[in-house]
Length: 126
Image (cartoon, rainbow, N blue to C red; front, top):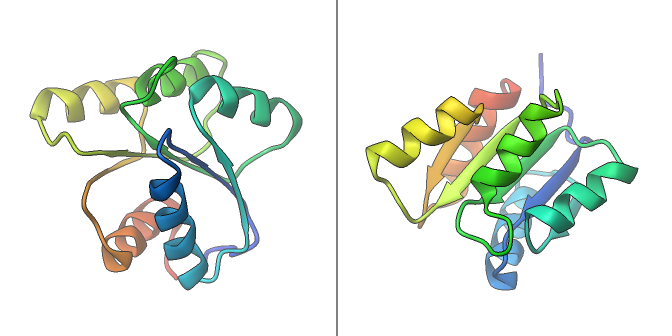
């Protein structure tokens, strides 16, 4: 089954340039409904009024990290597909994210092909 390019996607990062990069890569892959939040708390607020088919979140943010955001979602029973983006490739971070319920993990820097591969693993074939 092909990926629904009309799903709502939430990109969460405290660095606006990174939000723009990820959003542009998603647009290149023909996704159209892309929202943004600058941290986990802002993302939770956005999610209270809208449902999302995918979340792509940075790990290292204040005041709520991507990992804390993910844990909060999973604690509430929210199983929205979640891709964590980070500059850290340490094994313990990957394990912590997997234990918290992440669906996939991308290490910065990355390109459109990497994002497409991770999206396919999480959402299905293009």
